[in-house]
Image (cartoon, rainbow, N blue to C red; front, side, top):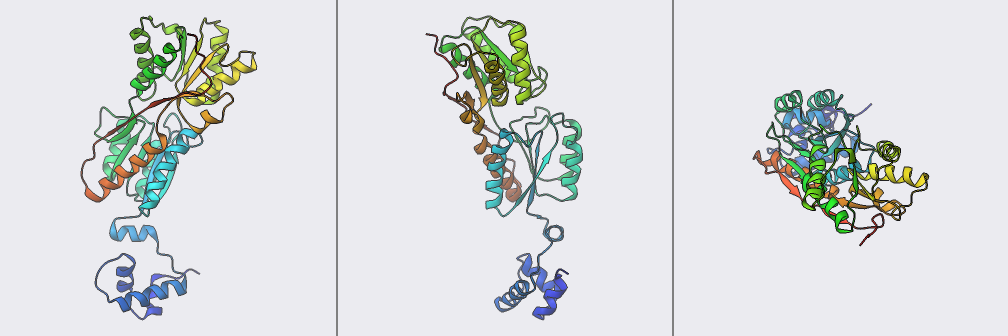
Amino acid sequence: MSATIKDVAKHANVSIATVSRIINKKPGFSPETEQKVLDSIQALGYQPNALARGLINKDTQTIGVLFPAVSNMFASEVLSGIEEYANEMGSSVIVCNTAEDGERTLKYLQVLSEKRVDGIIIVSEYIKEEYYKALSEMKIPKVLVSSISFEYPIPYVKVDDRHASFSAVNYLIGKGHRKIAMIAGNSTDPIAGVPRIEGYMAALRANGIEPSNDMIIHCDGFGHKDGVQAMKDIMDRDMDITAVFASSDELAVGAMSHAIRHGIRVPDDLSVMGYDDTKLAEMMIPSLTTVAQPLYEMGLMAATMLFDMKSSGAVIESRIMNHKIMERETVKNLL
């Protein structure tokens, strides 16, 4: 049977209140008493209950992180940055998979509320009214990553998706490509769908190319299977293109794999460019040229902002992170 705080108090010959003050780093005891209690804790193997401790000092040393998909490399790299800083601050991370349509978001917000987490980071998810209401009732810091809310005042960390998409397509045009298809997200998605499509179209117009909706393949998600299906659609339509720009690395890799299986050489016959710069981009053969988001740094920054708000109670400014083109092997120079 596990030792209790009462057992520790008896072993050290002090009151339960004294043990509680020492555990929670409160004043009111001598160094000798503190050492006696710490020796008793070690001798008995006592593990303070984090939730009970949190009820006393309003700090459970846990934060919640919500992802629409936790298994992809995008989530892995963002989470690495979050965990790195959280661990430095002595906190643990509870990861929640809300599903791509957000069907479990409200449920997990309730779970995190019951666990009295110290703050919440939400990644790549649109903030609905019911989410914001639940977040507001919790009265804890919250930060968005790779997302933005125009309706609600939640600080965020992200790249400028429209600008990043513009940079990617402008890079392809600079290599001589003018017939460029886009594998995009949902056309109504305000987070990663609409801005990236707008950047694609703006880059074409800036270079004297009139964009066509027929050159945009919309997907429900950003995963490998969506990219495979998108490339199948491109081939079924017999589209006259020299390059494909995909809204995620996984979409790009899915498109590449389908093309290569059907005898299309990348980049000799078709150039492919991704978005994110996950480790998957480097692992591919040929390695994927992509527009990079600093995913690890975005996670690290979000956690830093969250803990700064937790300690100061002050409003934190949102951060736009820099993107860059990672030139590898999947784009052919036509000039």
